[in-house]
Length: 133
Image (cartoon, rainbow, N blue to C red; front, side, top):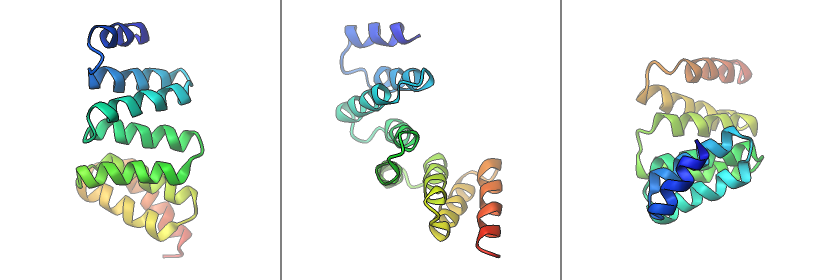
């Protein structure tokens, strides 16, 4: 699959979706640094491409770069305020940093925009327990 994205990029170097999908394929292979570079390239081509910003945030979290991950999720939200997956990702990073009040707010936003997001619902419950509520 990676070869297909590389071929598409070779034919059309500004093919944003191919750069993003290449990043996802690399991430699945555990090549997070390369995935990060692909997401950055997609963003360079199309700065308002929320999928790439979100995926960049997820890979930064996997790389242990929490503050940068939050910034990427925040950029997704700035472009698309109802991006439930970005609110959810932001919540995960904030919970990992033990910033529970902010994590709770993020999970609640994720649920507001996607009321069937069971992971966000479960994480919200866990954070409430951590906060003693």
